[in-house]
Image (cartoon, rainbow over all chains, first blue to last red; front, side, top):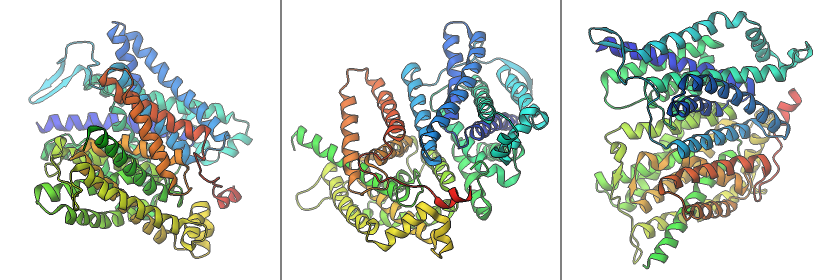
Length: 287
Length: 302
């Protein structure tokens, strides 16, 4: 069973990292921590579910990814407009929280608040089996797609034009503007990439388990903890990766020694531990 | 009590609890610049403490009320010590994390009754006033009166303490530069905020005669924020009563809408979340909030 728990931990690490990256990009793009990203996490799997119910799930995946990216661009435009209207960061945060909650309840209103299967094939579809370890096809796809995306972002992103622009944006927005970059478009793209990543995370996570409206809260919690604690460890994406690892590790330990579903308690424990240890060093980089 | 009277009393209890929670939230949000969701967290902690003390330990309800209020003090000091170091944005998202995770924690602990919660919570009684709603009002009415008077006196324009809070809210850098102990003042405000929230939580549990993990979830926090912004953040504490009355009336109106029963909850939440967004976008001052100028030091630095 230990092997199975370790594999589940690895899978959780993949999902958490994707969510953390998504929230990070969306928040950098919108210049405030963005709860609406949690809605993007729901939007992806629910669009797939809609098409799955009409036997069109391959089309659904493409449309859901487009939908998530579009949502990112749309939210960026909205937050830019609200900033121009004079809304402060805290107020923008509450607006994004309200939109996330309204979206979550909207989906519950349309699809029902109970969980639904997102995998279009047999429920138990083993891909690989070794002693007590069983890896299903869904989990294999999640590891390959999720892990591939994470590795690509960690290795290629920093060297890509968009990655360089993101770093420039974090260092000085004004400087980037003076150099002639279209900062608004750049932020919009980064925000869309963030929403796209959480959308992918949502689809992978939901196809492995089930899709339910309250998933947005799980994702937001992971996004918050990694967003705050990540910069304490290492600046940028690596910090998010390490915090996601810590959350996944504590989750594995909880599953090994305790009964029940501690999915949302675990990030809190990591968070409080980080706050206690690094109390004097906490700085929110984006703000 | 006739069914109409008990319905009105129940609604009154609901309004008072929501007003208390909004006052607690606005003490931090409107007067010290730290918007957060901790009011419902402290309401949950005190509510659970009261339920455990009366149901499991069979302690007299009045003593349990006092114990529950006192129990929030060390928790608030500890949480305040950790959370108030964060900036305004970090504070809000950290309290969101705390709120969401607390619900999960309560759902898993056997001590708190797991997902089923704790049932048949007794109410305190005084002379002829007995029963769940009356017991709840016995806590909420004096609680709201005390909180309104204390906050109005403390945060009013003639109060030195109020001026210090507003200085921290409007320009924390210059306040610190002039020797104001911002962290200590914020911690004291946080503790008072916790006690007001706890009073509402106890009253909430008494009127429901039940407490469960979902009694103090994100939905409650969003309703509190809606009341705060509808009433006008940073304004008079008594305005929260008007905002709470309006919101509860709206909730009740949606309850009477001709919808499938399972859809009512979701529709209510959609309406109130959009209401919260709408107030922030189109009417930031709410009913009677002041115009708040943000952080002159930060603007000068830019």
